[in-house]
Structure formats: structure tokens, C-alpha cells
Image (cartoon, rainbow, N blue to C red; front, side, top):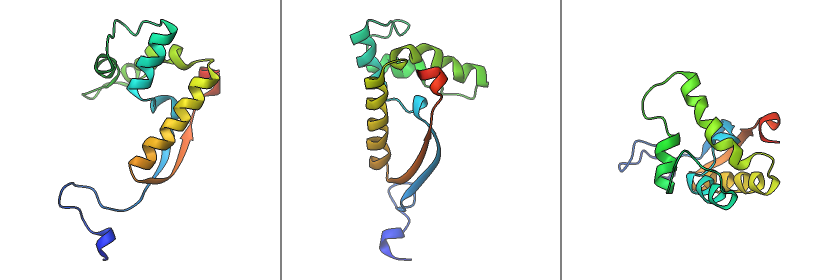
Length: 116
């Protein structure tokens, strides 16, 4: 093994480039983006007053059923639905986030019937 592919002592991750083969674009939206767009559009995110509130509202911390996980989408999809500029921003930011995470290739999926 070369040093560029060695095990990192500071984390449990290998220092290899990553590949993400199943990413849902509508599930990869930054919490900060959701909060900002909701404020601009005057969309209430169940009383969220900060990015941290949005994160607490949407992140599942313990195992749940699929219905509970999907319920989060009902909360935030109105923020990005039918908004080409918002969808473009989400796509761009997803590329940025994947790059920062060391992902060199990813396949993003989305549901046009839900977003457009």
C-alpha cells in the first residue's frame, strides 16, 4: 500500500476516493439552503427559526419506519418544488458537497413528478 491509500489514524475512513451510486437529489439539500429559501418564500418549516431548528426537524436520529423518514420530504419539498433556480442551486451545492467529501463520481436521482 502506498501512503495515499493508507488507513487514517484520525478517522475510521480509508483515504481513497469515494463513489456514490445512489444519491437522491431531493434528500441532499443543505439545511442552510432550505432555511434560506423558506425565509425568502415565506414558507413555514413547522416553526423552525434557525438552520439548527431545520436540522432537528428533518434529521432522523433513531431507526424509524419508511413513513417517518418520508414525512420529512412533505415538510421541505414545497421550498424547492417548481423552482428551477432552487433546483439548479441544489444540484450545484450537491456537487460541491460531494467533492468536499472526496467523492469523485456520483449518480444522483430525483423524481421530476415531485419536484416540477
